[in-house]
Length: 355
Image (cartoon, rainbow, N blue to C red; front, side, top):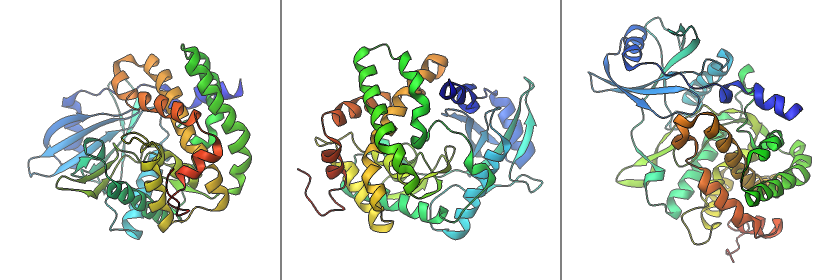
């Protein structure tokens, strides 16, 4: 019952994203920021996002936060971007654009009566990695890029960083009740197997690992590369799932998205984790559970996406985009022991060949 209450109280996932007309979005960009241009709606899970193509040729992203999102959480995301821009200006992240009044965001009452936080960021050019042919060099660039981002965030703190978010692999047990909604009995058994593994083998070790603010959504949609140099990262976007959580959860989450695309599903994740570890080494306890957390990310992806797709069928395509790969990965991981899976993921760290 407690887990279900926590699930229901994670409001930003239980409330539909705003659906503001293009004309209103145009007025917000013009009135708050003095930017007049063509408005193009961008995809989003909880917030409404759009690109503004200004008459001066510059592009920006206007973000309308979910009405249930606490202002302190938005402030946290803005403060994190500004912190990174100061301590690691070389990292390709969006920059916060201030309003005509010099503010980093504004609270705006919409026509339906809801009050949302409006903010604007610079638009980053590049190709989403999901649209490229993946290579070892690209995966290693992503691994080192995430390590640099985590190092930049290591000393950052904010009151909004400890907010409640279902996309937190370290609290996956709260989703146990959602397995009842899985119609396929084979998938239900598979999900239960990995939930049990998480509760028995991961939860007891979490007090031993490092915690800090993490991006928490570093995947193939949220990393951009140069069109003609696809191992050169030009953008890290979508900081909407940031929170203070175990650092190893960041690594497991990111590694999970590299399982597809190779005959050996561990080849990509091992390259990614090896490059990350070279800049920001994982501790012993972190190495012990990083593979389990990679599996846990696939588990929560499957559970959350199926739950939300049923709740918001109009946004089903976006919500379910990672679902097939998540079930495929869980099936692949189920065929291995924890030790075998861990050895294969950490093969580059341990200077061993993938068997």
